[in-house]
Length: 424
Image (tube, rainbow, N blue to C red):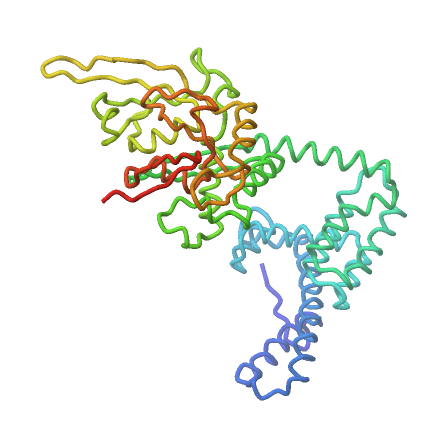
């Protein structure tokens, strides 16, 4: 087998150009750009961007020819894309996408190819145009496909690739509105089905008493969750819902959303959730009797997770829980003294009555409106307090935390309001 080696004069014009291009670039390697005038810099940046697009068309043209000639066979690569990834160190995904675009421009899409060769569109725009035309329903005629391609190429003079992608999705509405509606519906159904299949949630425990999680949910449910969280993070009152001791500390957006997510979970009514094991999704809090009386120490969830007694008392005000109280006796096993009923959220009617009566947070000096408040139990659940209007009051999130903090003493005033004093 013999190999013919061409001299540069005998080489193909594109091969000669590639060699000359590298020599010119080598000569510019040390040329300082800072010495250019601002006008020159503006002109050159725009000119090189156009030249980059023109070079991209030339490279894709050669790549399409290389694919036809199966250049990957000499190195036993599985495909032209695999060969390109190997020799150029591109990612395999990017390399395969380049080959697909090169083949598409070589076998059709002449208007897009000519625009790329002239530098009127860049590679990203060309790829969007090709994918938009390929996504049209099979019933769209060749003439309409050509008109659509020409329209998108003209639009590329005003819109970047991201905006062009949106325009490409809507272009069928101009050609065939009825078909566009059906196609959009089918596309959305496919996206929703794929999103539902890909949905997951993972939680892992950290040694510091927190959990780390990651999840993927459909766009609809993400919009619902976002709307709920934004209700808690409204800039007008977000600082009043921070649980940090120093309310003047400004939290970052992720921190605010994290706090909002916790408050959302605390407010989900247990009796509206699916049942499991014969009962609704209810948190069971295990409390030692002596700790229940003193308000000191820790409680334990039925999952084994420890939490402070103060957190358990606050949870009792806002969510359905079952208290399981036991007493330890020396030399004998622990005995369950009481397995209480669930303490639910105040009903809508009770909340309405509290709103009419209290108007807002009942802490002296606080002007938070009722819509920003929690329904608090004056007589704590741990002392048998009922969920009622008489035993309830409105407290904003900040003061609700103080009401359940052992660091503060609560004083009830004749006016129906309360005051907090730090314990000394």
